[in-house]
Amino acid sequence: MNKSILLLVFVVFACLKSFAQPANDNCANAIAIACGGTQTGSTVTATMDVAPPCGPFTISSPGVWYTFVGTGDAITASLCGSAYDTQIFIYSGSCGSLTCIVSNDDAGAACASSGLNSIANFSSTLGTNYYILVTGFASGTGAYSLNIACVVPPVAPPNDNCTGITPTILVNGAAAVAFTGTTVNATTDALFSTIVVWEAVTLTECSNLTIDYCGTNPSVMQSALIVYTTCPATGLTSGTYDVTTCLDANVTFRFFNLPAGTYYLPVLGGSPNTPGPYIMHAQSFDCSIIGIEESTTAKSTLLYPNPASDVLNIKGVFEKGTIVTITGALGKVLLTENFNSSIDITSLPNGVYMIQIQGENYNHFERFVKAK
Image 1 (cartoon, helix red, strand yellow):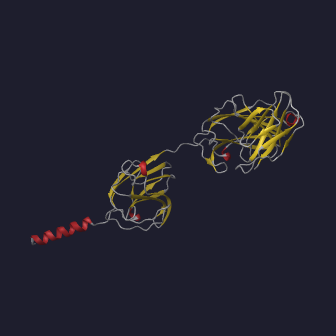
Image 2 (spheres, rainbow, N blue to C red):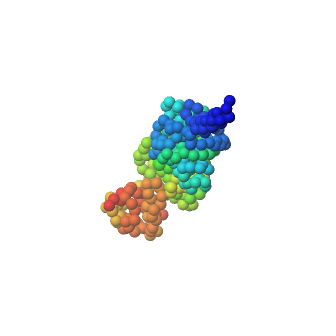
Image 3 (tube, rainbow, N blue to C red):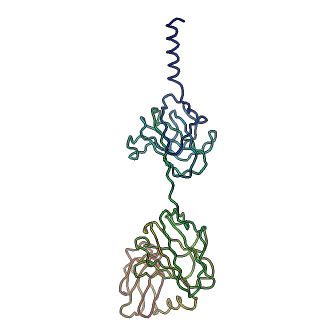
């Protein structure tokens, strides 16, 4: 064969090879990648892909495909180190029916190589097939490096959900029951928009219930919530309660005349609290023994006006040494001062509050409303 013809054939073959599409140009030919794996390649000769928009991004440049089998871990799919402005799309499902999981354009400071490289983070489900599309911003193509990192997610506390706990039966007059736990790694509860764990108690008869966090690091438990009667929680208990404080400034709740039943106690780990270990004590008494008598043995008092806007007046005669305490709906002490018949509440936001008037031989509690 003529040498010139051989040379021409070689050149044509080389050109065709240089323009050949990557092996994983299509979703159906996605290349498997596993935890800790790195794949490199180029999208220069890839073709445009047909896939659903994902997050705020749509596919606008050629890309290549990888597949990953979920391990149940937290996954980071990184294109840091790539030579162009990348985008990454993560899908579940099948090539003909993809469902968006997450996408990313620019990782910014998270990528030391270039803020224009992409990182996608998602929680994987064990055994689920995921498809990873490596593509570029606008019409960009180039050399890429894809790395998959897997991290075992933190384990939530066993009482992270109220449905997963067994209520403790309280016997009226018996010693307090101590609950210990932590709010670290708890998940966000939609009802509170913060991380929450749960305890629960069952009352077998009409009871006065005392709940306190005495002994807990005060920075962990700066506020608490009253009890709920259903799980999932939908509403607070009705009835009378008052709020006092432990010697270490932690919160104590007392609930009077609660009917027999199960009560769920949320332990908040988010602001103003901080995640950490806690100690909760629960103790119950007969309805006829404590609580209502104490709350009604106060001098005759009247809060006025109620609702109040700037000044809350207290009608009544009280002995020297009487202390007035105002707490918010979450049990946090907002004001403590010696008795004064007029209290300035201009600094309080609108809401419902509890006022405690405490003397040597009496203890009185009333709710009032602050409203402009």
